[in-house]
Length: 275
Image (cartoon, helix red, strand yellow):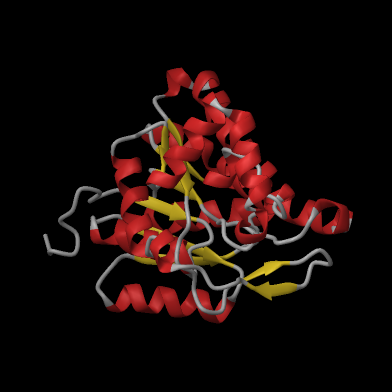
């Protein structure tokens, strides 16, 4: 067995949505390094193919499927790619997401729905299509959420709502499907370095660049990917990334009024800051 295949996930197949770039791409690379065969997914053909070629050139087993995971038929096609190519599916990481920077009162209903759909149905539809295969494998499902799901953030209403929904979805599925042996977990990601060309939606649905962030608040994409990998390997229920994320969780749980006051008084600085 080659060094490329001799890893902790050797023989397993992982599907990572939204893996053509950013955290998803680095998570795919981390899983590949541990021996998994990985199915990539995205919406930009050139970028998706470039990621596939880069990982394949490193000697990893990868396939790719261009699919909008908010469309159920496309999600079914994505899962079929994993089964047709590798014969099984052991791990699903739902990372695909659209973020936003806009106040609720300024947003059009269509933009709110688009952001919410990407974060909720973008996880529900791939999981629904993949569930029979994951049950067969007693596999693992990890929803990528955000620390902004732990405490609401100004200018992120639809994003925060969608990410919070994933945490409750994971809890519910854990209860409903306890006898299947499938792991359901959620990772709350904190402030992370972005690709230079990353865009988020404004109130009118136009893509806009993210404001520069102080490096001291951020983890690299590779660091976050390593945490996601460890979460999946340990089949954890919840992982909250960064000391700041842990602090938000404690304050939100024990001192919610204080947490709200801090967010309100800091919103000018924070509104372009969370992930």
